[in-house]
Length: 294
Image (cartoon, rainbow, N blue to C red; front, side):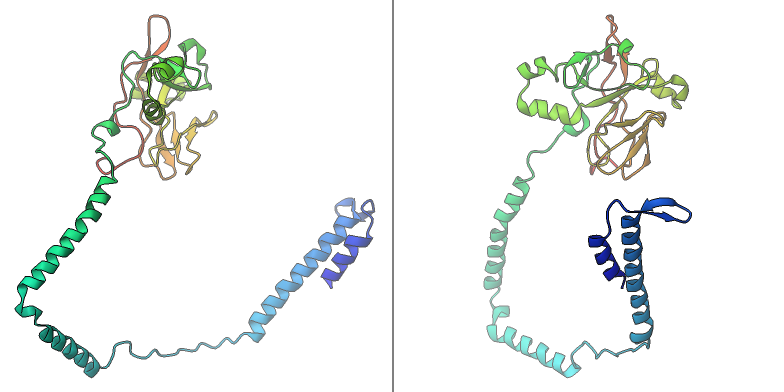
């Protein structure tokens, strides 16, 4: 019935028709009738489903015992006897050279597979997983313009995405290979924020920064996504991939999500011209955990 009313109202009621609804006031008659009729239809469906479940579906519990899965013992003994007879008839037990030759053949067959799998793993990473291009004295360059940034340019609440000098902008385009530039983009990206020093809970964080200006790796410690979403009121950094959240007022420790380690902090200072520079490289590896680092 509700469905029929809905269909009739959809075609016959004027869109401009108005009606007064108690407790709400004047509303569109068209939308009112459509809403009520749809609610009646859905309610009828629900009532019917409940009625069907309670009255038509059987509510008695029935247990059907399963037959034994194992074959009878005599059948198993017969199968074992057939296998023993076949082994004795083949006389392989008396010809160890045949068995040894088969083992050698299977071993040689597996060598190409092992070589292919091992070879596809590529060269060993060495120390690359532990190091970035940041070095003491390198200026912080705004990404992607490659412009150096002064401490006076960083106001409270402002956010800058920076790269090390020589790895962004025109200089990088002239001197770096495409592979080196891609590696730098993956490992060296840093987020720079100025906090109110009174909000910072870690003395190390203040010591490695300048007047509340702190720099942290943007590479999430979960799977390496760029952590680039900064919430100014809470001072939280959010990874958009899996919602790992880091508290910038407390050494960027993890407060939510699957990441297990805090974001590494880059020690920074000011050079003679007032530009922000790295005071050292990262003191710990950046990016996701791996087998040698939890």
